[in-house]
Length: 475
Image (cartoon, rainbow, N blue to C red):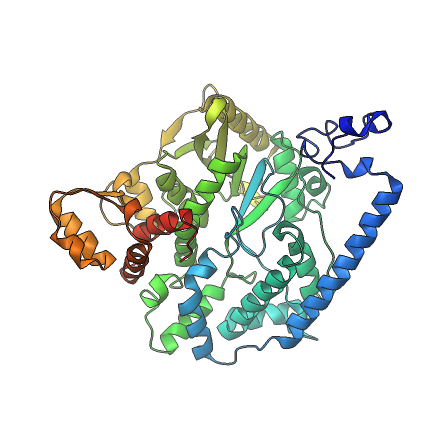
């Protein structure tokens, strides 16, 4: 199944693709064979194979559901959060750019869409309960909330053992809604745009279509900690911690002190991984939908600023027609660029409702940034200062360049301090020596990561995690 139409002979040489150029990048990968060209016999075999795989995965999920042991106490949840905070913050990103268990679509897509959090309605876990009753339970009871998070993850883990990550999310959501597991291909701009005007996907599809994009989407979220629609899940965790005599600001690096604290922590953990994936895969657009001024403590400001620091690039702010837009442009070889755009949330309503002129502005902005690296003529883009970013991210003092730890330790005093952090006493005796962090042993790096975590030094944690990741080591 690796032959192109041209290689298959004249019988397959005609233009059969209805989505783009035959065997071209806008339809399928040039090395792949289009399913439309397989013929009715092979297509029917593929359909039967898919149906059998769906049934097999559904049996696997039924077993997960049957064997699942829910937590019943605050202590179990507190222990789980303390042990798994870093994994929760980067869940789903082990193999490249994935935003969490709710990730949809292929990372080969030219458009990446990042949301804030996923919510899968867990009807199966609350038989007989209505939606409002389920939401009230999850809003007020962190034990129930974390049970849903755990079930959500275990279902995805089981499904992903049998099929690609990008294909299983719609089926897992169906399973949680008491429906059989079914694969879903719902990550296409055109297909989304066909959805109802009241849905998130319908509105987002029309935004992207209005910006001139088509084809597949890779969708993900900052957070893998599921939030009920009322957005009080984190608040329930805070109340639980306080009730048990724990300080939310110091427990688990302060990650669960509030909803904003969780988004900020998760963004810091994900930024190095997303940055690396953008450099490797070179999408045209990474879209984050949430309007906010640069000074606001908002989820996408956390991610945008952490990405800017990780990439060592300047984010810019544009004010147009009373609305805020922010962006980063990452240059690639051969004059290509990735535009990371913080624009409209698709469900904007009232005075902030999205107009045709807003879509046209975003289209012109994205195209100009991709073509030239600068906004269109007449649009003023102001750089977002390091002081503003640091304040939003909760970083005290220092410039943007100082926030991300430098790999070189130059002065004898810094060498000794680095040695103390890394747990290497011999290094403390060295003077007038530069010690690249990239040359530290894996043992020392792991020790430094643990100490940095206790001191809530997320910048050092990110840098060390990246070096270890390059060695194939996870922390």
